[in-house]
Length: 186
Length: 189
Image (cartoon, rainbow over all chains, first blue to last red; front, side):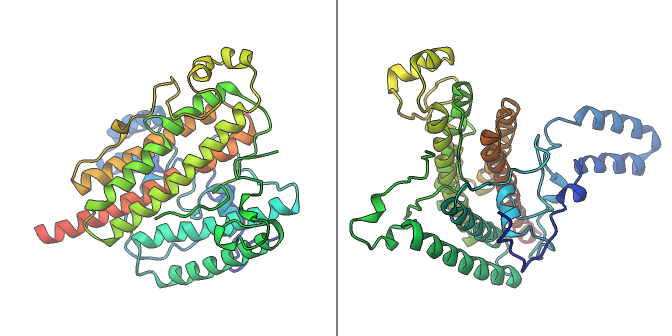
């Protein structure tokens, strides 16, 4: 299923080396200790060790600052963002799994649907980003591209396997009724 | 208004029935940190947001949460599909069967029905957005607990996806909160 990576963004899949189980939110404890005095450092490390593996390790809190309207300098490609549920390497954080699950479509229909899912997801992710960064021109352009790509993927699927949107239900008999429904897996 | 897309946001294909996991995952359907509560909370809060950023963000995330309700529902349906009465009894889901048969019903993992009192609105946009940040954190923690309880990749895939969405939503809510506070501080000198 790697045959439709969006190479326009052309990013390597090296998230494991970029973020090897980092507990980056603990760095700030270390810094505070160093700045104040060396006595506090031990206490901070004690606290840091206690917090390790518990809540809060699971997010990069220190990344979560309002950063004006600057474009994030890196995004995952469409497929890798989709399987992670996150298009932004700087916000990505894995739990339990060593790497995200590849979605393995078993037939052409599932493959085309995964393509639709991935492009729609990427466009939606950029949509949410733009809601809080409405003046980011580059990301608006990216949204336009992704939105266009999702429409193409939807048409490609619908031409072969029937409507995903009722608007495209044009055939006789009424095609909208036909299985599969999204929750069915047999 | 809303339009239906005949697909899930993330595919669910669970091959092995698991009633114990179904019982636990129920909480992300109709529990206190569940997707239904999140969707309704955000969609309710839209109306008092002070500017268009807030209205757009709450509408879009609220809409996405509705799609998550559907992912969780699909998981529950597939996890319970074909269950025998004995299996239901063993998992403690016989009371669910007695009341609802094999229909879905939004409740928490203990079987307590969903209640709109899970929804936190306050009439104060900062308090509202901060309760949304809290909601995302609690949902993230719940997904981690659920991931601790299974090794089935068919279940872990969607749970991992949903957990990651909580992180993104938290980030966007925090940006909105910080943006409003920044604007407020400018006025207050």
